Length: 336
Image: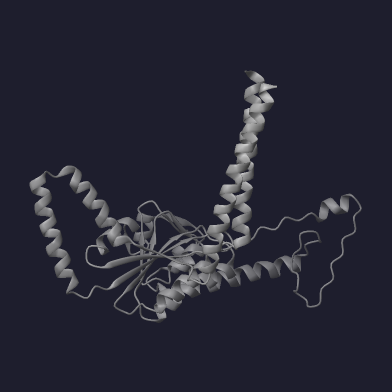
């Protein structure tokens, strides 16, 4: 009997907590609804962040006299910088998947930057991508081209990988920086198509596909692959590879295409020797140097969740947490 009284008391307390939190969530949602029309752009001032971290470390390792001297130097430097026009460095992160899904955010970020950037500024794209679909990375590369066509210096930084479609994007930059062990290159095209025609045939399954146009479907997953269809498919792959090489060659004419367009990839040091990149450096080093005399601004476009989705997610988590606590209470009573 005592157990059920404790359980009822706990359930009542849980219900009060749920009600209070639900009310708070609804209040937050109402406030959020009023600000839904605000730009969905996050800005981080990296030059201030670097300076802040440096000051924290200096306060830990310098004595009081040294700290006073450092503050005087900092104030003098800040005063001098106020009277100087400082150009801006805009930073965008592109983390690519096989579909180049990040392109949707990239186009918004670049559109925002182009509204304020001038040729005295610089745009830095930190590219991380092993490549993917041709049309997706073609569009991503075209977004970067918008910066270059405005005569704004475009720098690409690769810390881990920019291969295939990732390199298709990167070569648009006026300058490419690579970490020593970043993977660079893979200027090639690949297509993998499983075919189940023999399995269907073995089980007497008749598969028919109807097309209008001789090459509407060159090869099929379920249909029979004919020599003519296979030949055309390979021809299309070669045509795509040719376009890839032309694109890279246009923006990096210094490359010896017969050496680099074999589909192979190289590490940063090798890529530098092959002129696939211009310099060995991590993005951290490059941005830290720029922040000494310029404003370094990270731009990130965030697609807001719908209000209903946010509420559903929060309330779902709250209900799950409450039920879990009730279950744990019951289990504890069983073993006590």
